[in-house]
Length: 138
Length: 149
Image 1 (cartoon, rainbow over the protein chains, first blue to last red):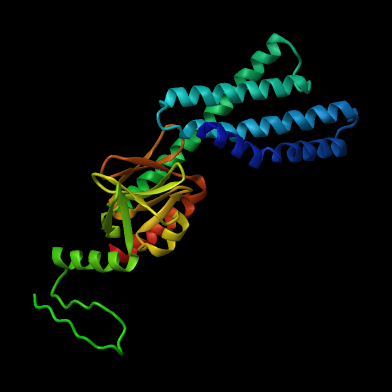
Image 2: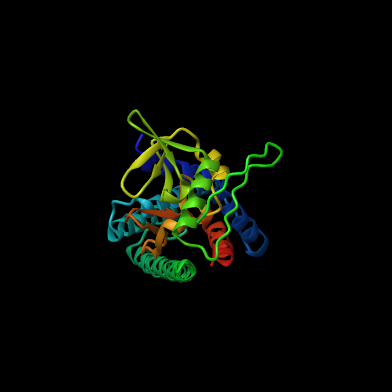
């Protein structure tokens, strides 16, 4: 099996389980705070499975950033596309956003802003670390 | 420089060099002694080559085989990476699951746009620092350069 695919699956399996835990916590909070919160068994099953897959893909997709022979735009485009698809499908199957072009457009805009805000923050912090280490090694 | 070998079976093997200041020769002596202590043997075809740790840029795992990368060649090592970790001098640090980097052979660190910290070695090869190892790498580099200038 290709090394990248193996690493993708490995990371996905390691962290996929965190998805259902987080969704469980959110459901518990909603149950305690919302006036009327109820889910059917099927809705809970869909939420658990879809969020597991979302966390699996999110963890696995980090491998795209470490494929040395890929250019930065290529790895960034793959990472972004895979995450975006995983999120939008997960939100739609759970009815967290309605199946409506306008709603999907707003969701996409929010996703793009958050994705690039996180990306810029990580890039700046790594740059600061590399600068400090370069000063130390002279 | 004078050279004297004292044979005394009651003493521990030790090399002591008295000099006014460190120079190329003292560096070479240190490398020889460290290499002897580490007992590293690299293999290339059917050739066996004794290695001194200081000349190794990094040690990496490729297809489950461990290689010592030198400026112009790479030699296969029989030891596993975790065994080498405890055997090598303190200037070798684990930067990710499959790479032990020689601090003295790192040219610089680069922040890649993908958010990972890249290590560029003096021969131009690169590898990355894993997030899991980042904290340890920062600490080890700080300690090493505080002690060794």
